[in-house]
Amino acid sequence: MSNPTLLDLNSVVQHPGSSEEFRLQCPLALENRDIFLAAPAEVHLKVESTGKMLLLRGSAVIDCTVPCSRCTNNVPIKLDIEIDEEYGISGTPSSYGIGGFATIDSDEPFEIFKGNSLILSNLLYEELMVQLPHQSLCSGSWDIPCNTPEEKFLHLDTGEDSLLKGNTD
Image (cartoon, rainbow, N blue to C red; front, side, top):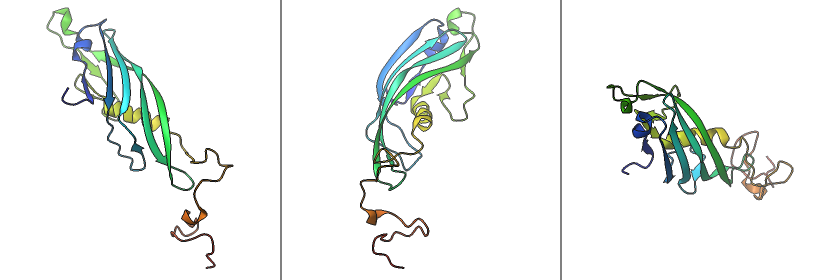
């Protein structure tokens, strides 16, 4: 497979009732500079065509780090993502032998399909953005202080990177 993030689903789309399973590692190109992947995502995906719908079912494990919402230290996060998506299929599948060709309908604002191929990295990126915690803390709770020396915190009023302890200005 020349591009592990582009999965050709045309065979499934053209043959209603058929399915295909994928088990692979998928690198993600993250646009968000605060999130770093520890490793490529581990993906298990089953794709099935009903003739009018394309069903994507599976799971992905994504290990990443995000900044602590309080001290900005890296916080490791392991996300177990369930994939349960449905997309419409238009046209007549070519397996019916009447000269038709079925295509996947996607009204996603973020490109998920290129023709009848799934851009897996884009699907995983969308799922990651939805499932990441809004606030991650290295201590695990707002009630517990971070494991960072107080000197590393930024001044909240000025944003300057100066010492909080001993600063008499």
